[in-house]
Image (cartoon, rainbow, N blue to C red; front, top):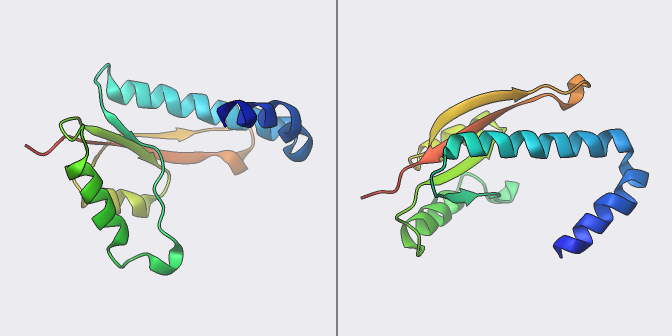
Length: 127
């Protein structure tokens, strides 16, 4: 699957989205990876890459319940967990589950339409 994604990004995506947008996508990816590495500071941790609840079901406790269950019942629950989000409302959501913002930074693109703020969060495991 990863190989097919890379082929798509290298061969088809530039024609569909344009090289400038592809370049920005790679810059954002590298920027986020650098900050995540800075937050980890050599520590082993779980990384929450993506989590989403369909808009029609938000605010009903589904996301909180699911994430709480995963954090407390996975084989590596002894590890801290790291995530990043670009949505201030998500900071409130994750904070209720014990995550703390440890780094705020802004990606500044040449095109201001692609400039955004990111919140990098960390949660220590519960004892």
